[in-house]
Length: 345
Ligand code: GTP
Ligand code: NA
Ligand code: MG
Image 1 (cartoon, protein in one colour):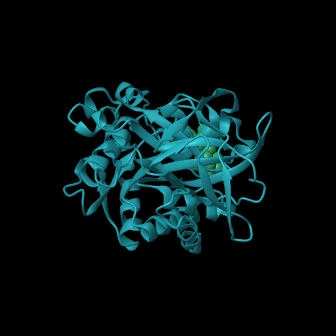
Image 2: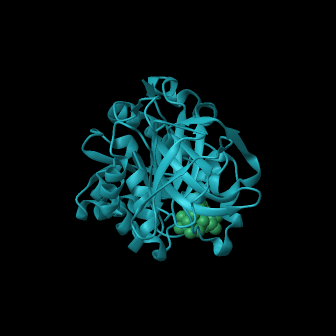
Image 3: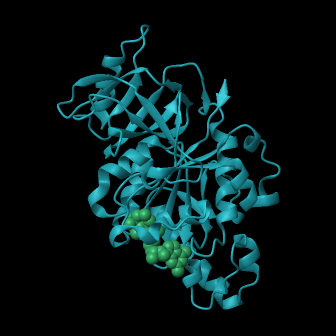
């Protein structure tokens, strides 16, 4: 038995800061380079434990899960209204989620939509109240914990932040959730934690990562146990033509092991099962966004969940994004399982 990284999906309204938050964690600038400043695909990035420890320091020293899991596996989703199906896919994959809200804007249509997706899948989540650096009078402390930075703010700024937070608490209450600023939560099982952050300055990101690890330790350890020898299960994010490789599929593997030459089953646009044989498995380096790192893939013979990988194989031309992926096995009727699974997508 092995414990895999929790899959953490970041959901929220357009421009509320999902990609910028992940940029801060991986030390990248992907949000700045997106066409129109809009995310249009699902992204995937593995954040190794070393990076989390570098950011969090002592904040996570008492969490034993950090020694069991390889890290956190983040899924970035688009917030634009047009991409409901991609948000659902992100929600379906998630073990845990971050619902991000611009603290100055409050809940917007796709915030509600994302919340409903989390309700539907019963995904445990935290709320991140972003862009606190834009609260009037806020003094930025780059990379500080929320608590450290908050303690150094003027009284009026503290009050302003709490006023805005209690609007979020009120909205969440109407939606059926008890919530509280994370440092005032008394019962993590019944109350949603709200963590104020600035994705731009990094304030509060320490607490976000520590809270995700804490929730994973408390509620997910069993769910994260994987059998390293079991045939892989995954989801296709996108079909892409790559120079030198032909058609490839970007996929998330969330269970089992996938090997070169494995026979896999996928779903095509007529909702039929298609099978193919894996020619190569390409994995981005840790901290690289899968949709952004063509040049930095490692070629591997096998990969164990959780992982975001590119697969090169024949017969991919009619595969649909969102398709489940299964390794064919003699023991199970994989085709039937696949057809059952797509009834939900
Ligand atoms: P979509 O993926 O298109 O839904 O947007 P997103 O949620 O990923 O938001 P994105 O990261 O693209 O950020 C939108 C804009 O808000 C960018 O100009 C960011 O620089 C800015 N932004 C994000 N977080 C912060 C923050 O904490 N403070 C400030 N001042 N600006 C921020
Ligand atoms: Na954006
Ligand atoms: Mg984005």
